[in-house]
Length: 317
Image (cartoon, rainbow, N blue to C red; front, side, top):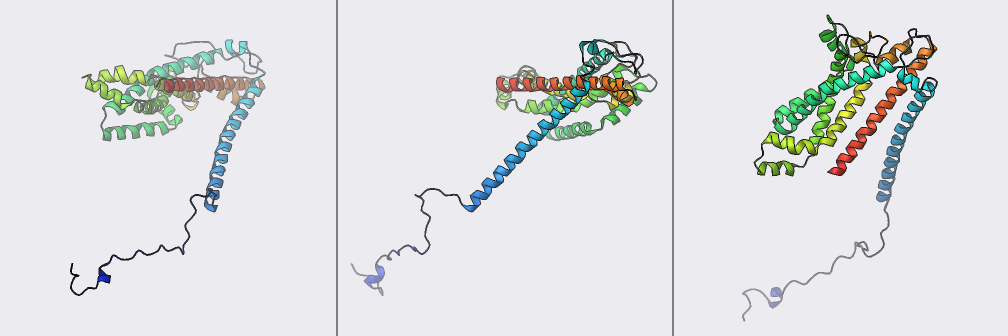
């Protein structure tokens, strides 16, 4: 076969393969791995932040332990069964007495506030997650966040002007004030719980031709029941310790156990702690520490219950 014109046979041969450049040595991938300086630095940084986070957690536990120990040690002199079942003495300087009216009044106020706030908060969360458009949901969440950030004293002043002026203090006014505080907590926490319900459950109900409201009532709510209860209990624990609104709307109470929240103020533990600690009397100080321990025990118990409900809800899913 004739060669192409103007080219020699040597030029038509394929180019010779060049030998690889061995001037730059490649790492030996078959050898054992050895940490480099960069790896050591990352390990040190990781260990430092792990230690810092562990220390922060331990610090929080230590602070809580100090608070509990301080309150319990100062309340030990008055804590007894009679302290929980008897009324305070008519004269604050007298020794003995208890906080039975305050315990009953606090329970009535908080239960009534929960009855007011829980349905409204759950309905708000259902509207945000199931029915609202994106723009409406964002605006509604902003309103709830702003309401959650309003100082409790402002809420107390609002309820004072709305329900107390011209009518007098009452346990119902105190419940409404606490319900406003609880509402955004219940709504936002319930919303986060509803968002955890798998979308496939809603899609399965839609595929069966079930209406949206029946899907919410029969599928979404039963699935999120544990989280909703947890949100409600946490909001109760938050509202039970509020003092500023109760000073304005339910502070002029008597010395007897009563459960009627309408028409007159109800005794409550936060206001009792405030008034007893302000009086220059050692017996009043001791009873104030005892009431503080009872309130602290209730809040701790409520948080334990909420954690238990949350754990059971997670296991059921």
